[in-house]
Amino acid sequence: MARATLHVCTTCRRAEAAAQDQCPPDQRPGAWLHGLLSRSDVPEGVEIKAVECLSACSNGCSVALSAPGKWTYVYGRLDPAADLAAVLEGAARYAATPDGLVPWRERPEVFRKQCLARIPPLEIPVESADV
Amino acid sequence: MARATLHVCTTCRRAEAAAQDQCPPDQRPGAWLHGLLSRSDVPEGVEIKAVECLSACSNGCSVALSAPGKWTYVYGRLDPAADLAAVLEGAARYAATPDGLVPWRERPEVFRKQCLARIPPLEIPVESADV
Picture (cartoon, rainbow over the protein chains, first blue to last red):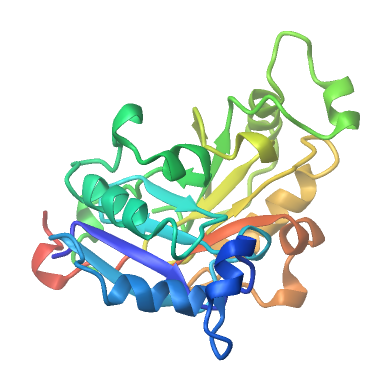
């Protein structure tokens, strides 16, 4: 089981100006980011998933990290080219935690500065665990 | 089991100017919103939970709706007094869905306009359902 799912919004139109210039003209910046991530050396335990909209349209490009029993984090205003390594590093550190809480100093700068939201883990009652 | 957990950030300092004026001086706007919601007629199936930070500090007041098997939604820039009824109505509609996807026209305006992000539901493998 993946210890982290990195959801990548493929419909994000907005990106930093520098990235927008480099983005292939037939792709949205979000799809370009997803392609770059998918072709990267993805850290162990991290699964990359395309999602059609993370509803963070004014803060694209955007990604979300989630896993069972962990806090979920959403990040935005990403530059697909410049932030690629940091996103992968941050996902690896998240995957290595039991609860999703990476110590502040160990988070990549882009995760420290461009967090849009975090959400507590779901509490799944024992009696419904097999539903 | 709650069909929706409404997480309310109690540390949010920021709120619409009008709300800020009405907020008791000894409370943060987020804690005030949590108190107002907790003392309301909470819809069936909705559980209200305080959370110390949703990391949406520049978009307070903020809340998140989540439930097992459903999309998670995060909303921000809420006015605790003016938006109270809409937040409760939106939570009730979310609780009534199987997947968290409320048809666009049925969402309160504040949910249509002030969504900060949404995150797909977790897929919990069958073999780990009892972990």
